[in-house]
Image 1 (cartoon, rainbow, N blue to C red):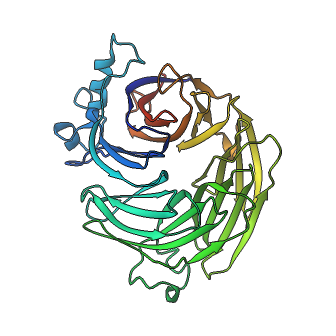
Image 2: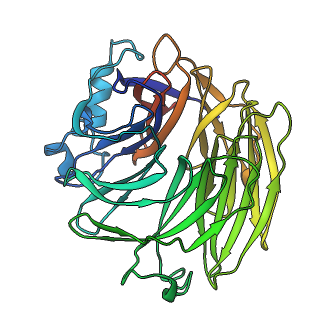
Image 3: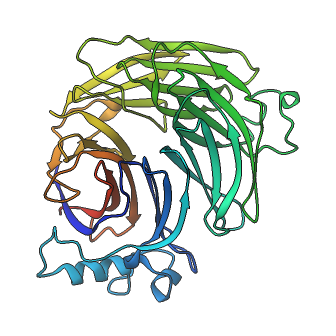
Length: 395
């Protein structure tokens, strides 16, 4: 592979404790701000606007592919002559919401009228929804008997509309399914309704509960299986990995269980990819891929990156992982989710002290055949810092 180049845009300490979740929202439409939401063990949910992607002339263009006029292209000019790893910008705080207990996980969704809602879970055993435009908490549910450590949201589609018979739900119109995991070793599935004006309601009673995990759950990811139902993966603190199938008729079963092994560390991050592939990362530095086929999950490939992996993001055919040594690795994913090529590393992405990376968010930002691909990434670290940078495919 040609390799990728990293250019730092922001590196700033915004929290006073571990950044447990971050979510980058890059919007390329008119009159839409791009921003970064983050949660931390300091109990705060913060939303920052991105100074290099401000609303205005640039945002009126649907894509970033217009030379010179595009914000990102202009960034490249700004970066000429400057050290690629010297941050160019500072973040502007837009919203701040404080919880009395540490926050441990974050997911973002949208209503159908431009509203943005953050769902955060924490050590008070509650998941709450926060409206970014309305700047207030919108709904909450007392969800578990211990800290909520993972949350994932899926938009209901016509195909999975029938998951869990409507009688079990008191909501008139459920638009999303929320999956939560907790230190109490359970996974729960919830019915959520999101309407315009950042109106949110969460059913008090879970649609389904899973009690098969043997240890505290530290990561969770859910995916829709077209026409069948919901598949849920959970990583546990003892390094075990669980996968369940939640059939649309309400039945549920364990599809896969990878037992804990001594010295394996925790299964800190799990992520479903389109096409029934699952990726998981472990405290012993391993990253593994799995495939779901005919109601069975089987391991496909594994690779070691040399440092405990604490977070991962998936963009196209690249897995970007954040490690305890403060470095980032990009792992190209081959055909059938095989890891054939060696990872590309970057050291100390959250500053020279190389704080351990604890959360990551990444997305592709523009379409331009001449310039190659560009990913925008954000990493949160254990020292409360956030780093935002651009990864450009070398030509």
